[in-house]
Image 1 (cartoon, rainbow over the protein chains, first blue to last red):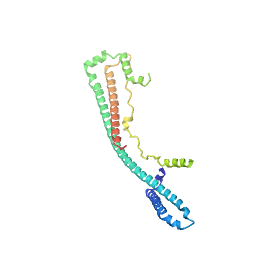
Image 2 (image 1 turned 180 degrees about the vertical axis):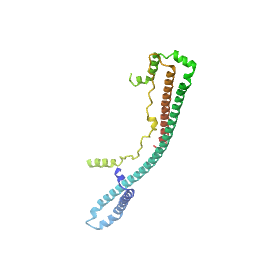
Image 3 (image 1 turned 90 degrees about the vertical axis):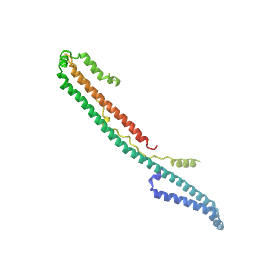
Image 4 (image 1 turned 45 degrees about the horizontal axis):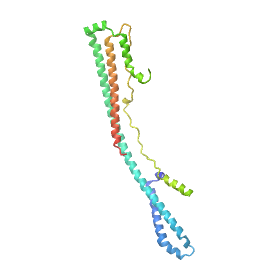
Length: 163
Length: 91
């Protein structure tokens, strides 16, 4: 039925209905009318069965096409419905993405600002306190402690297989 | 008989139906696509490092951690939202 996609709906419907109607008409004629007429004509009487078979074949083809057409239309309708729902979901998702982006950027800015405020406070106020100045002068943090701190910052390297 | 088999195959082709519904993978917010920064280290010195420098580096690293945690929360929220939105689409 994939080939049905290539034809316009109206043309497709016309062809399908034409074949079906032709099949019905020919079948009715061949079974109820033509047999009586052909019997009267000596040379054509033998063709009666052939005409009946051809009529039934056209009717079968018409029914098959009609079934295919109805199914095709049903599928197209279903696909259009799902596509519309997907488009709606896509638009909604885009809105949500913007909202999340704004929220993440805002929180990032607040986190950075708070961090900077603390560092500025250390530089501006903490280093001026006499007790702390004395501590800084007399108790520098040993290199071993610094190295351990630095090692802790790259703990994830072990998980990545770097170390 | 061979012709009948061939005819059946041709008729069965009628059932092979491509589904023309397309769905793109939902986009994620750009800020979530950035990697988390590496934590800051302290340059060791011969005479030791002032405690305030250690404190400042720790604060910077806490800041980086919270930024990264913010990203993870963003991913989680994005996933839940997309799951809900696309889950509502008729299957």
